[in-house]
Image (cartoon, rainbow, N blue to C red; front, side):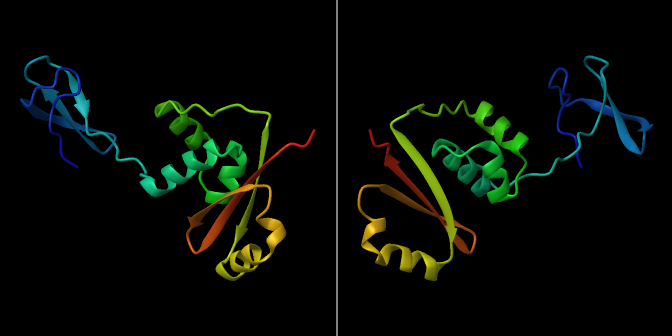
Length: 139
């Protein structure tokens, strides 16, 4: 891990200043600020971020998305806040979802009753497919 600049003032002029808790400590020459190298956190692939936000917009709850993708619901909440995602709130439509493999997906679309009166989105989830279906509530 390398340090590129002081996190306090942004200066690139710093010197080593000992070791604290087995991490190199630095001192900025301009502002006399002491700092250490930042930890590199676990990075989640942007594919899963996009899928989580897409499923959120389709009406799935945070916990449902967590069970499907295997990503913490807290991370999903943070992404929704970070990217300022607003889900349209409507009582007219109700979405349901199914996880299917390719053979099950083909048999689902071969039945005519599954195609009438509803909208469908199919999205890839690794080696499976997620089918999201929504239909209007009947009066």
